[in-house]
Length: 163
Length: 355
Image 1 (tube, one colour):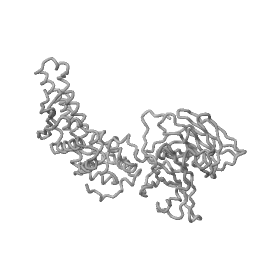
Image 2: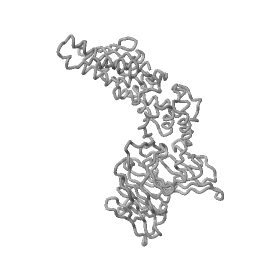
Image 3: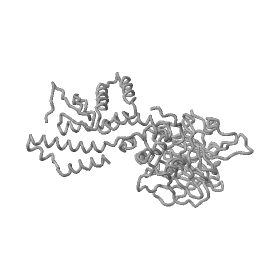
Image 4: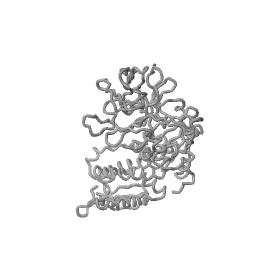
């Protein structure tokens, strides 16, 4: 399957989970190791990504565009963009992080993980479980052992669940 | 379960109809079809793999990346959330606590109970930790985020946050006192060398040296009969030498290369070019000078015996904190505590690790 071309620029179609199509320059998707391999080695022009919601894909494409425009002079602007990029509800941050990991967009993955870490920092274990909707799967013995080892981590501020 | 089944199905389908890329080159029409089918299946398989979407079931590589952002307290908390998070953070060590020039935390403990207090010097936050291993232990050295402890005749390295312990070969001589030891590098490096220091009847300074992998300590002696060298107040390693300081202004060094001792007097003179400069910066009375008793909100009756520590400063420099005896303000009914400065990191030993 040959890539379609307009002028010199190669165009590529990404298909999100709900079959929405996104047409963009091939050069943009090269920031993703996964897509880069597909494009270079498998010579495809349309890539279905059924596991990624279109909403998430829109966000990621927005990032790829901004990142491609990054120059020393708009560094500050890009930093602000990045901050806003991860300033989303946790559920969306989860979707983005998983998708970015899957697509292997390295710099962005680190940034997303840092954003997740920032939401965990300075919170008690109970608060983190509540915010991230995780039920403990430790045995009661393990649970009480960890509580004994680091009581502070468990007894921290429970009210801080704003996320 | 749903995902498992989906994965199984795709995997089966994938295995039953293997399509090799070499077959594909021969026929163009078919080639495109086959190629597309091949990659459709390959991707479907991957998609199934990542369909588990909850914070708990994040892929381990993401959890590892997240865990690398934490300092010690957040890391301990992260590990307490669920089994997945705990196992994925196996390699996270709270490395950010080890940045050069970062002032170490203060760890306060005593012989009576298992509860210890850890203080972060940047924000004075206090944390309670249960570290039963520190009970009745004397700290001999603190560096590279490890403590070297002596307890009931045994000598061992210890990470107070992961509770990992590495026993060293038995040491037959009498007790070693607080701060009277040093080691050259991280315990994970193959050329780590440990030295225990003791004074023998004011006449000799003994250095007992153990290289990693050795099963016995090797003794070196330095004659003190013509020297003025008081009690050992800490030791460090810099410039390929163990550097041993006394209570006053004397220093004895032991060169690991030629196994020889040197004796120095430390002076404040800076101008004289004939005077060598110390290969490390040292601090005295860190605890009292930075008013830690008040910052930790400790009572007037608290007395602390603090073990020496050394850590990396900026560049290649070494910062060395000497032993400190912090006296209680109300001396008549003092509560005795022990303390040590430490850059808190979480270490677990790689499988098959042996000293």
